[in-house]
Length: 368
Image 1 (cartoon, rainbow, N blue to C red):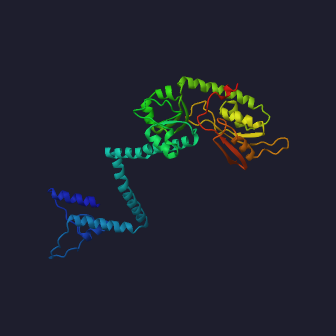
Image 2 (cartoon, rainbow, N blue to C red):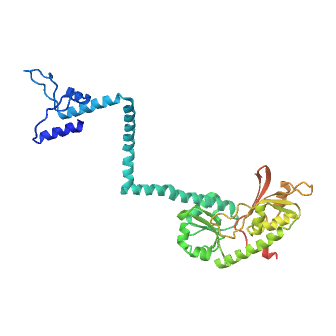
């Protein structure tokens, strides 16, 4: 009989049924070894005329039975391995079950949501703010006035944008007019609503983050959103026409990817005109204009940098990077690049020519 059966027999005796003799420790061991049955005694276990010793309680009998059962099973290697596995399961369950219960409780759900917001909400917004402020400090024209909410203005100052170029947007500022660039955060979108894109700043030139943490760098439209969109569309058409003519220039070579970008009107007007002017003095090879418009950027926003090198043709040595750099640095605004740096592409040294944001519209049309 199992320890549970022994315990049940004791309960039945307590309820008034015929009592069953309580086995002692020696009898419990005999039961487990199969040498005796519960409720019987072996002949000769007591001598006539002698009194039997006091019987132990049921708690002692159960404890002894369990101890002997465990000792016999642990003598078998397979049972030892199973015992170790069982102990590991118990320990893991002791940790996992309370954790699961805490997550299932209302207070556990609140803590989990709070932790998620702490790791993805504020940190995501802070990271987007850092990226946007660094981009504006590096890419935007040094004379441009930037409109921003107070937190974003603080981040821009830390990134190196002078306070005199910042227009703080708040309850006392009813519109962003007077700025060239508007940094759109959740606070700015809440303040201006649909007027942000529909009236003041219709074009996105860079975007960072997602959801409520998304930050957009927009171009302010002094004559209204409709006029700016019309000007952008006209500029794309002028870039396509100028690019088609540029590809017939025998002094300009371009990679297949660069040719596609030129034909599609994706290249900044300042780059197109400067490269054509450069080709009057040197043969040039255009390696790339970049990977194309970034995600979230308004279609038609031009690519503002190119990677170029001197082209060799007709047995002549290509122009040196030093000569190309000197020519580009001699240009005047708006055709003077903001950055001219040397880079390595594979085993080749090239110049990266970059212009600041935002790209001016109508340059090609003004030259016929």
